[in-house]
Image (cartoon, rainbow, N blue to C red; front, side, top):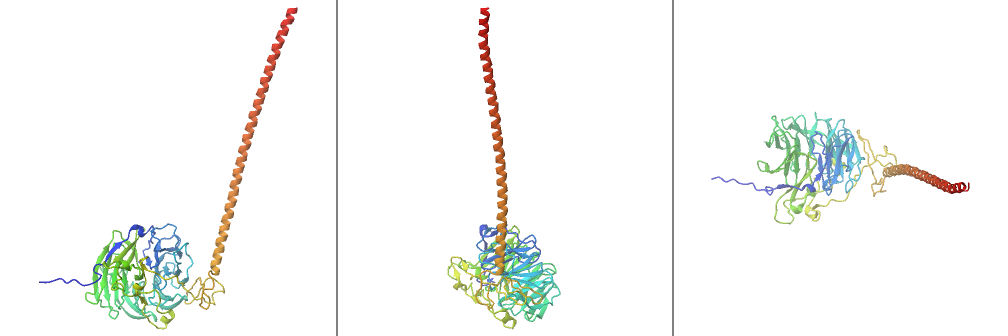
Length: 537
């Protein structure tokens, strides 16, 4: 007699639930680009979505409390000259976001607390190096202001955003780079390429450490580092069936697990939760989200469940763990972009009867502070990302993590290329350019002024425009008043002439009547006189 043993796991009963439509984001013109990107980025403060925009590329940034129907004229982040292909929030500053575009430029933006009140066109930094469109932007997990970009020119560049200079240049890819991911401490880099190979690099020296065939299909592949060092990949086989695999970095040619899923043609994006070791597979054009648990025992990747929706998804974003609601045992929150303009919010929860903080569901998670600086990382120092306990920073009122105040991204000025007192900051190193609004003093102390010279110029320009509009409206009002007074004068003259004409006719009539009555009286008086004279005769 055989018994079926059920695997013990606290995530066996994870279930997803979509919020009501009025708690989601509606009327969003999601980008129709065919680029394989998630089109969505989320952090505890904002939701960013790449949208359709005429005359260039743009994306919309919404605070989480701005739910419901979004106005068609809502302010955008629109400084790119071509469609935006990828966006990524800085893990160490919830107000900083990077974007890559078809105009070959990477821009880094500072979003004010509370969201945008007007369209933002001035970035903090312009990173110019790529010769073709930039389709991938990725932040370092533990080093401050370290950003990786990859373009269709087959180049991978690692930048120091704080200075706008290139730290590392990797040019050994023979074709387009599909994906890239740092390991837990940022000491290794894994990439997948159009030549169907997976590669592991030392991100400081650009040295290729190992490479192997990833998936045999010709469609796009994805690879991510797991917390304990293994690599999880998604792709297609020769029959265009979707599959996933689990590999060890020192044996890329020998997958630990290789499983076929289905025959859909959408690229699968693996979204990884390092705290729970859960992997969520979300395919473009799919209406499902599959989630798996990675464990040390065979078969290593365990299927848990599938969340089903009626509408296909065009993009998706995963909220960091510090933005989840621990009071309801929420372990993940997704933002699904539908083709009808709806951004659907999906909450993944583990049912628990107790209302207390569940320490087994919420181990220490990633903090928003950087462990090391960019200079320390370049010099060879490695550090795990800083973590903290959600139990210490839970807001019952807001139902989640309370993010810190707005932190300004500081960009160092180059005194050789920037005139003294200029409002923007720029530097050129290795074919790049940086521009920023920097309000800090030169010694790195407290801000020297609230507004920069460029801000004052912008305010003066706005005042001049308003004055011109006021003068134009005053002239228009005067012209209309003159027309109204002229028309009123003509009507008055017409009425007066009409009155004068009718009065003359009345006087003439009375005079004629008076003369007629006088003639009658005269004829009447002459008739008796004639009769008397006749009698005398």
